[in-house]
Length: 410
Image (cartoon, rainbow, N blue to C red):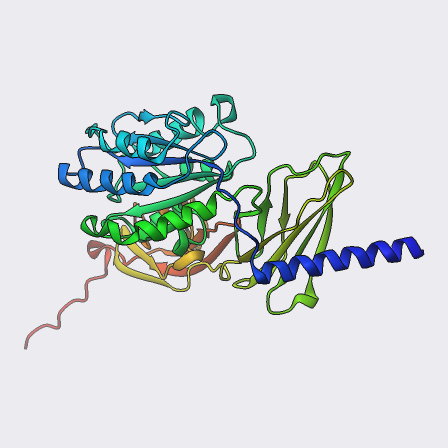
């Protein structure tokens, strides 16, 4: 009993020291990571815009600590087909990489960003393709905001792989779509800036990239309103020790939750947390081989997920009507909607899928003079769905309405 008490006291002391270390700020380590620049090189970008963006990327990479044991950089063009200007590891200095960026020619063609993202996942970020295991991976997508093919699924696949996504839009992109594509929270990973003002964000973005590429870094992925997944590089093995993971509301440390994990664990998902709340996280490696320092992180959960707030039926015609709703905006925005409509008296129902960023659709092929139940369902980031229903009625056809005889004139 005494030994267990002593162990508990020692563990509590280490966690308290971890929290106090997080308040003071841990010393910065040399950055380590694989950094991919995805550059819109298609015909949708003017030669002037391309030259400005190219100079911006060159300035970003110029002062980075490139090298085999530090940061590796790569540049991929978005066009009809993806094109690698230079792969990871080709340049061992920021100046050499900057010169290569400045020498890059515009590829033209279509803006197939989704194809380029899938290419990056399979050909650059995959360990089978030579990516370094256990190091942070970062993508910087510089775009004019448009794409000829879908971006959402391949971008989500990269984020699921642990890639941190920064997006720089030169001002013509869809805010909701780009917010969903960037890593959460969007306000830290998405920048809108005019092409002539890119220099304004160079230093700030460079600092954010270096922060994202800190080695041995505890990271939060897949943040939702009720939890998040934590990931970290392998620090221990199953035989060399174990981890203690703690999460506590920043405003109420006494409400901490703890979890002990085996030494070969590299991730853990916390669920059942409060929405829109700051949490302090501490990862304490307990090694029986060497001393490993604790890692700290602060994560804010997303606001409460909500579905459509109000349904409005308009433009009712005998065989069609329009359905609109108040969408959920901001970090808790829905990934998409589907609208289902069926007769109240029974019969076949129809479903229409509506992409994120849209909040209305016109339903066709209806029966005149019929009451319908309309249900709008939002697909949320957490995988859950929220729905709202309303009734609607199509008017009868004009020729089917009863005609009232006029009174005879005297």
